[in-house]
Image (cartoon, rainbow, N blue to C red; front, side):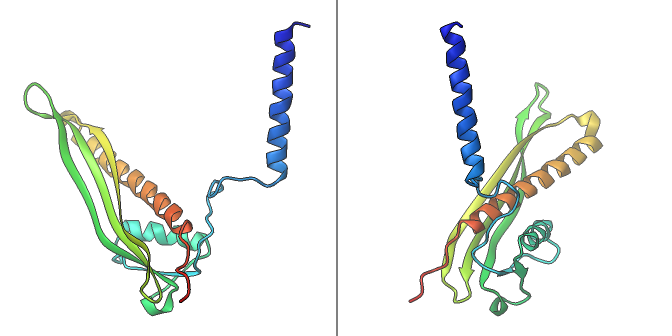
Length: 174
């Protein structure tokens, strides 16, 4: 047997042993199965009732066994939306001065407080950006693409919020 073949076999066996030991000990990346362990059991959200982002966040929280409270005093924590903005700006023009590419942005600024008003997470801003090529001969298709990109950013934003909420630690008791 050549020496290089022996090295490959030894490395393969070593990798197999490491993988098996990690699987046997229950190692798993946090949130890799789509669920998060939240530090609270109920949450009050200050999104408007018609907010698609608020609706999707509520759905994800409920799936993680977090109750959505109707009033702030009924919840262990409050998710306070400070601002939510969608933007569309011109990224590039063609030689005729017509739009060739847009930059879509979705920005959410929020804070999280406990039931006593203590900030668990100070004002935090999450900004997502997507580039969108534009063709004036396909306006309807590009409008649909824009809506799809905003929905994608919204889903990404919800997952980022869920990870940040799962990483919170309750304020120490005084």
